Every structure is written in C-alpha cells, then in structure tokens.
Length: 172
Image: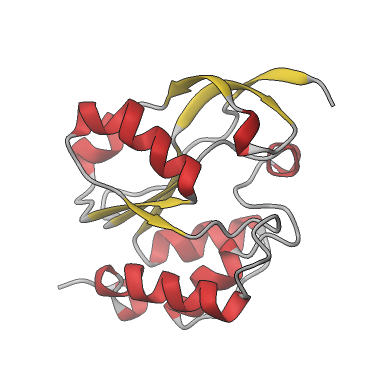
C-alpha cells in the first residue's frame, strides 16, 4: 500500500444549536468512498452513539446525519489534509489541521471529544493552541480497536458524552 496525500473530502456535520463536537482524525478510505463519516461496516461509532442517545442506529448516511443534528452532535475531523497509507492513524505524516473556528464561533459547543488517541493528540498539538479549548479522548470505534468490547465502548461513550446530551435533543 502506498502513501498518498489525502485532502479531507467531507463537510462537517453541525448546526447552530450543536452542543457537542466529536472529532476523528481523517476519513478512512471506506468513508471517503462512501462520502460519509465512520462508514466502514465494522466501525462501531454509529451503533455506540445511537445506544448512548437511546435510539436505533438509522443505518443510512442521511439517517445518521439527521440523528446527529437532531441530538445536537457535531462531527468533523482534526485534519484538513495529511499523507497517509491506508487507514492507519499511525501512518499519518505532514498533518494540516482543520479550522474549527467557524463552528466554534456559532454553535454553543460545550465539550469536544476525539474518537481515539491520535485524533486527541493531533487536536492538542495543532488546534488547541488556537482554540484554547480542551478535548476528551474517547476510545477509538475502529474495527482495529477490537480489544475493547462493544458494550465497554458504549459505556465509555455514555460516561463521557452523557452529561452533554439531552434526551430528544431539546435543550432548555
């Protein structure tokens, strides 16, 4: 597998009422091909988020987009571009950060979360000095992180995200 320059192909999912921003690293080849976040069929992000929200995983990109928006969850990635081989975060070179300013200037984001150690490290190195906002690192939902059982992944997501998520998405 050869290294390639990848430009982030997806727009962030967010709305002016988003309260939580979840950041990955860079869409995987599967997600880039599907033009949607966490699209690998064995990635556990959407089932875990749906479980934390007390909803069924809609299973389609549009259904998942609407779930996130309805429940005031914004999604994007830490990187605008990088050199990478396949989907391995460990193979990232020459990272260029995304500009979170437009989202943070409008949405009342209460907390930022990273889906994995690399996303958290890149945020802290490249973005936190600009935003001044801390990030909480969640376990990676990637199929490569199979050592963490799904029920434990959901429990960790629930513990971290729970205080910021409101049933039904309505916030008073």
